[in-house]
Image 1: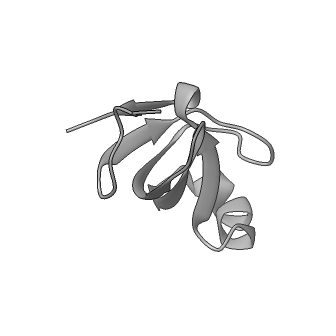
Image 2: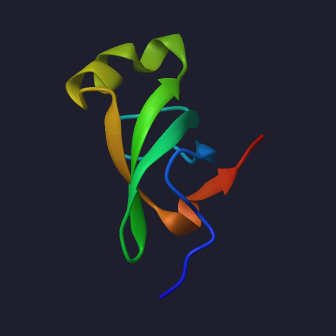
Length: 68
């Protein structure tokens, strides 16, 4: 299955789980229906959750949007 997302692209991701706000990340690896995203911008109140995630998250492709 071909995806519209590629490694190195900057994306805005919807909040999930312990995260209370949307965040910005960079795609590290693309899977069939999700991608591993390195979290590069997030709300200060989510700092503990981001730290627990080691600044990475697996995000559904449907829950992210490319940004420039």
